[in-house]
Length: 591
Ligand code: AMP
Image 1: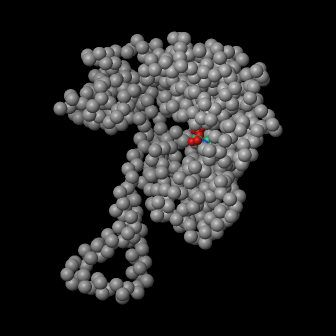
Image 2: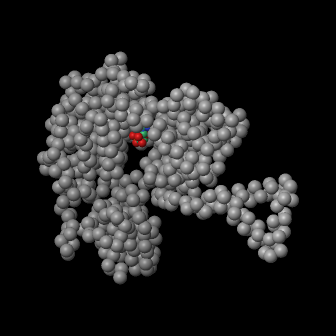
């Protein structure tokens, strides 16, 4: 147990102040009113399992060892208690440090801290490699409450004495297995050894290999252990439903949902979301696209819910958009489809949701939208439910058009079989006197297609890159993460600009081209370059853009801030057994 002076705000569940109108779910965990109000505003209806089990011990000042993957709600599980602690600590000296493996996660977590800590006016700063250090130093000097950092950059600041650790009350290691995979073990030890012995420590990891147990033994004191979703769902508990998952990045999820629903054209579907806000937004979007959709969530009054349910049962509504909490208490009739707009935070929730379809021997289908980072959670669900869930790309516009025409063909065949077409024959006969009958029929099909939105401009949804269906894990620590190496390797080009940061012009924002002196003649394929970059530079293949190949050389679009690291890493390696020239490519060279 930690010294209580660090936890002036700790409230036992019994004495927790209740936010007015808020479901007791979060309030019962001991969170204070300001945070409960924020959660209410965000539309969170109840805690996820990792939050229910992780928040109370963290609020009580205990160290925590949590096994939970992305998508389980683990960020809020540590951020909410951390904020409650930080809010009552002296301000603007970092009192909380969150260590994460990647720059993307640093940004995501710092956004989450900002979102949950908005009412508490918490100042948060993300520190990661590949970003100029000057502005980071300035921000640290101005004073922050919470620092979210990758270990290499955190250590760099500690050595420069720009990041102070002596006021830290709490340290969180997020995605610890990833940090170890990337070679950050020594950096983590070095950082933790310099933090106050009285600090509270939480470690989260999707997997618990012995190396994690060892780091926990060294740095955590008598931790409470929380494991989520370890118990397989009982045999036979998972319904027999055809399950599919579509891989899509967050900005395109709404468009992907619209596309998937247009493909499936479900008779009746339940669309599940995590929050009330999402439920409202999606319902509005779906109605705007011509679906008959209604929202159902904890924010509705009983008469409102009754009205929606009556309309759904009567078939006046085809899509019911719901949160888990709202759906739980409802007697919902059989639906043809269950759509998970998000991967549910726990396997049991997934099983419960898809159990709404495929009942009593009827056919059912469940579809789930999966963000690249949630693939592991999806695989966990697959393992625990012992069912196969295909993860595939979102249908393309061409797929959608083909499907629509296929459906139309089936409908026309039905109409032909039913007969009773005399009223329409006159029109056709007068037209066939002047036009080819096949052309006449094609024009009628076009007209019908248009009336079904066939000519609507469809949103572009980029395919998510990834090898073997999984976003590749970072193979090892990115070379530019190390402050030492990054500084010594900092070279300038002839104009005196640091390499990897050329002037802008003639390219997409944030992306630059890397020249690789080997092309088709050397037998190089785009996959070789993606593989070499992902493995040698420790880059997630998803961030690599277009690859142009010529006989002699190749050009690879990469994010500007990663270019230097990629060039260094590729320069050290062999491509198809050859050492090749690798450098930044300037658009003007093309001319
Ligand atoms: P994480 O596992 O921390 O990456 O969280 C996954 C997503 O779930 C994030 O988009 C959160 O905003 C959301 N989320 C976390 N907790 C809850 C909750 N209790 N209710 C609804 N959404 C949540």
